[in-house]
Length: 168
Image (cartoon, rainbow, N blue to C red; front, side):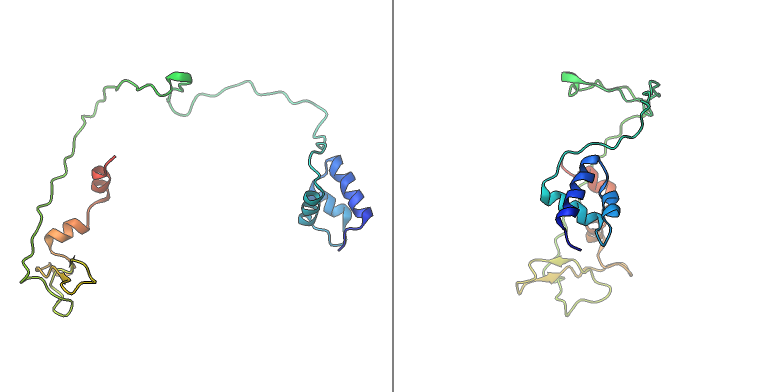
């Protein structure tokens, strides 16, 4: 495939007539693809072109409107950001207050190293793992769970509680 002067002139002529890149590639044939036509048009700097006539009969515009799908009122102009008055609702608003978890202080004698850790012990890490005094909680944990009661509450917070506690 090569772009001869004749092919380039035909490309320019067809492009200005409003043919699509696929149609031009079909007219040129011999291994010229749609992408090759688009690339050549780009390199030649051909921009505006005539639109292909779709139909000689003008179409009438629809004048019917449909009801909105939701009862939201559109506000335009400088009142768009005005605070809206609160509508009284039938449902009472319940304010949730997260109860603070009591901080558990694990005595140094109950903290365990990884070598002392057993199946029924809490695996909550305490301290910096890169320091020699790094330990695990070691408190008794229910069978089948990795953490004691306190650390289980910290580790497994329901997503609704996390969203509610997130500062805004």
